[in-house]
Image 1 (cartoon, rainbow, N blue to C red):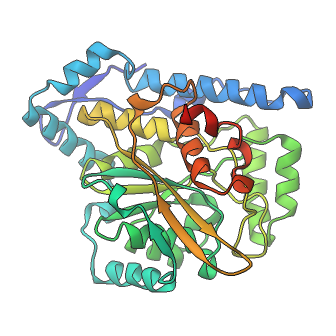
Image 2 (cartoon, rainbow, N blue to C red):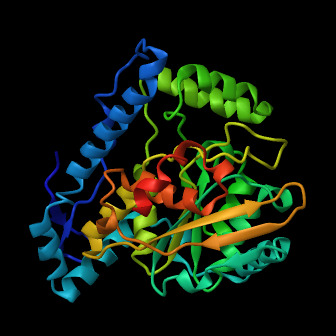
Length: 353
């Protein structure tokens, strides 16, 4: 493992080496193991836990209370230099720039598209930087109901939404140019939360382009590869350290699309990522990251839409025994109608105690 500190070339100061090394995935198994159906979920959870433990170890002893106290007591000038160095190192040019006229115009269009969406909980939006997590059922106009609702509700912030790298970002240069203009951040997709059989079934439900993307992800998994969240986590943390906001959909790809613009309204298991961003942010800034659970609810019979913003929370509040991702997703489930809670239907009670 690399040393935890290094000399920053831009500032000449010693900074935390918060790299999430791709080499940490080198020990992944090269073959899909033969697993009894009843044990598939248990093994996947064990693999996820191991991955998180490796990454947390590399970015420092995040759970070490003594180190946490040391970070909180650091000189503000030293922290500022470290953050500046991190931003210079990991922010691509388009994320370093302030939103331009085109960016603001495009975000304004999204607001108009979903102008009939009712918003609840605006008072829960924090004044400083935050990580927004939301369910991902699509819907609304052109399937952008959730993204448009986030952009509209958090319009006073510069929100950077995560976008699928294979399914959207790499689709064509023109689309990528547009995504950069509105400040989206690409994230590599994964299908690791479902069995091999479920992956193949989900592939069949996609359109032609979607099937090509799913096949690429499935084949990578068969060859022992794991989705690499490194670049996304770095960029998200750098953006947050600027005082801006990041929005993500932990459920990832649509597995049960209903037409071209909607996913089945049933919450899927979230992919790890919330804890990686929160821990990396803590290591960089010495502060806990505020996480805001949100839900986009649509009555597909009447067309009525509502966007609900829940109370924000921080990592130290999670004493549920669940991962931070599952803890946040359980909060999301608690704001959804019971019939839409899916994977988290039995976990809501655990966070309401």
